[in-house]
Amino acid sequence: MEIKPNRLVYLGYGKYWRSDQIVGLVPIEDERGPGRRTQVFVATLDEPIVASRSEEAIRREMGAASEEEFRAVELRSAVADLLEDLSALSPVLRRMLLHEGNVDVRRWEERIRALVTVEADDPGQEDLFGPAD
Image 1 (cartoon, rainbow, N blue to C red):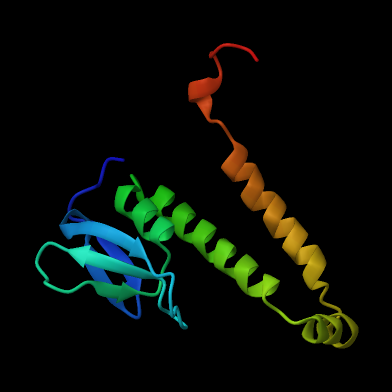
Image 2: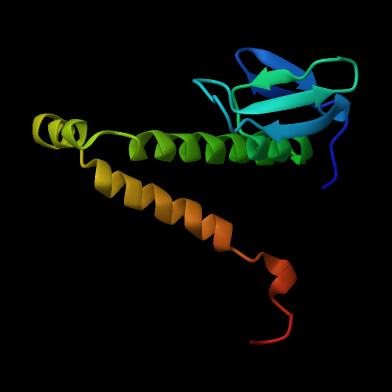
């Protein structure tokens, strides 16, 4: 991955850091509370910064090429976070949303998952002229 220098990377909680100063990303697995998703190691600090964004979201932002691609990456990240939150809703709340608000959480999950999966499965143009399976 080519890191774009001098790009400010959003870490969450209003924290930004220069992409070329980030030297390591470690996902937080144990005791991960709200907003504790990744430890970000920076060349100029002795201790890591605790970021509220995932390792993947930060890494993608570090290498994003254009403003348009940057916005697409952020949108993709927001949609993935929304899908994660929808998946965590209790069955009782899902029924309440369906019957009281006419919001079918299951349908939205399927629709968002299909969009996210299509992008993840897209091989890009590099594989267009490769050997056929």
